Image (cartoon, rainbow, N blue to C red; front, side, top):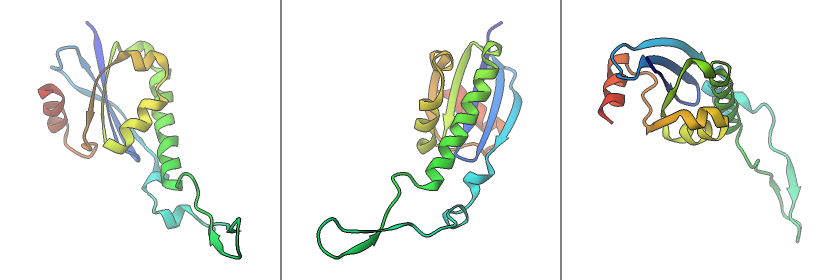
Amino acid sequence: MSVSWIVVADSANARIFMTDRHGAHWQEITDLIHAESRMSATELETDRPGRSYDSKGMGRHAMEPKQTRKMKESGIFATQISDYLKQHDKEFEELVLVCAPRFLGQLRKQLDKSASKKVSREISRDVVHAKQDKIQSLVSSR
């Protein structure tokens, strides 16, 4: 019997389910939480941004980071999920990703080659807090 894993995630929470290929019996394997992604930007940023002078003239302005702290934390969590899947790579043959739209791309980038090859479907929906039966119906209907 082949085993499928379903990763249901957003930038702060991930639920991983296991099922047989037919999707009849679902079991939640683990629930991962990244508390930093839940924090507001002001809680994550303890310092004011640096300031810089314009290259021409006397203007001075705050420097914007290339990546916000929230985006960075989201990327860190995507890496943690990817690492978990890598550690348990031999336990599943198929992988289904059900993620919030912004997070799906980050997770996809972090997956190693083995896990990427096992991805059979991607569903761009934020249902991490939904009940298990709603997630099951979403996955089985597509």
